[in-house]
Length: 117
Image 1: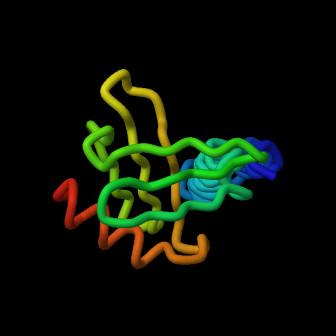
Image 2: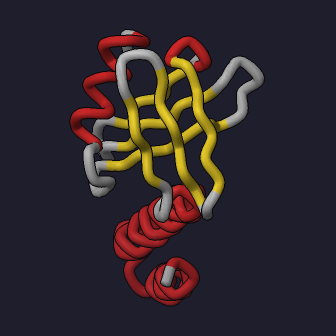
């Protein structure tokens, strides 16, 4: 889809200049960005998270990994797209949760309470 938008921008440029092609360029970049974010999140879609006061457990593809809240070294909160990314001290992604994940709001509130994003 993104490639097609760039092709349309290429075709529109000789007739209507940058203003006509700009719309297609913008759409192409937007589609590419959304696709990139979704690709990063794809492995976390089937994941489940269970949490309490001391830790949280991420179950993904039959594997369960438990983490203490103190294991979270960095939190990136993308509020506009309602995505929360948790990283450990090595920079490894622990878990990515988005607004469509069941329990997102409660988990995000708990992360905010414990880690302080």
